[in-house]
Length: 302
Image 1: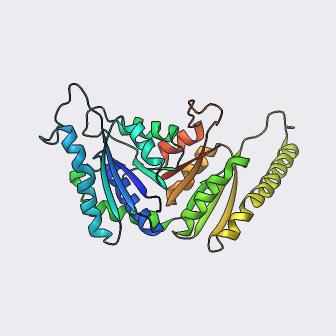
Image 2: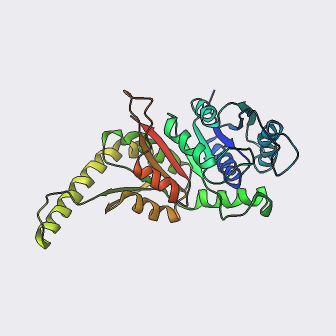
Image 3: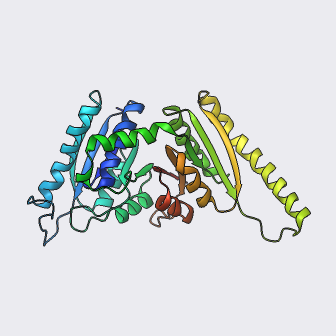
């Protein structure tokens, strides 16, 4: 049975955008879609400000209502829903373990008390061992300012119009990022841009001549490493057009700049097999997640 594309919902514009993105992703990958919401019992739970339903009832309705609206746009898509009971980060990590990827929104307070999507998203990214895609809504409209169908069209237009950007660090743990990026590019426009960056090494000779020499040396060495990393993947995906961009300076800044016209940004998050209880997002991934206008896929890698 194929793994589904799973989306975590909390009722914010960001989570609705994630649902639209997830439905489109499941459709182009020919995978089922699973919509989930997490409800955690609180001793002093109150009804949300947006209505009279209790939080548990409201949480149960969320995936069902989203599924009904998405079914009109994707009539052939296999959609399932479920309400989960427990801490949202823990529940989302559990769902991610059984999914091809997990999509969640990146901004805003949900109508459930205490459900801050930003903190839930970061905790999920830091702990899961499956790819997580963070989606931010187009614009800053509230849920009642824009129809769900229009939001879905906006997300779909971005997702199909630009290249996939993959940020790599030229290390041996890059294979997971490249594999995910090639797969994503193959089902989209077929264009993949590889971005890697470096900073001037400490102790290199100063001056114009020395500056030119170390730039040329590092650029040549980086291009050689990238070619060796791309060769096996390029053979597996001959229809994907690949371009390589080596930049000097902050990796996060270059990735955020490239994301302006991208359909998806793919980055890695290093995990530590010896210290699995010490999650680490990394400063580059942290900056890209907070500033990229395009959806960002975070791929865990040992």
